[in-house]
Image (cartoon, rainbow, N blue to C red):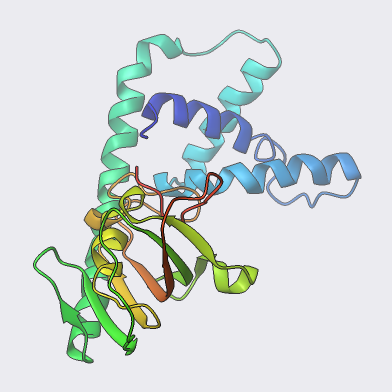
Length: 238
């Protein structure tokens, strides 16, 4: 589900910049300062998608400070709603283009190194070829998986959690739905999933930026008869 970009910007900016309003060079010392600094690090990471300059961050912090203290606003924010949305959209799109380019280069190298590319753009390489049944889109599959960005950063991994996952195959991102149907039970496959088969230009902040190509190693453990009520899929549909 896509959020309104203005709402996202306001929420992440106001919360994330709580710590920015302090001096840049001041390290948090008290427990209260460390608490507010932690809020800033958790939410401020989402603002990295705007690729702001120090001057732009200072302007955001200035607006936060005036609003939080109930002081007179220097600019009418209502008059700038459209400009906020336009700026946010254009910067997100620019970053997405850059990220997609790097993802395409990674995928091309994967193909040259022995991977196979499908008509949709999904790339895969069987690490272990299974001998069991092949799942259908409507099946519930039991898997172990390890998901990373193209730079190797882990964003989700049932392997690291030490617990396999079961989920309906038609309830996840397109790359998973297509890819797992190329496997047989007992097999293990590496997938490179371009953004249009994953989370698109919106991404899944804060771990997955817009336009990000995803890399998964998936082990297909089994095909189940019915979905578990509390199943948590590794890559949900948008």
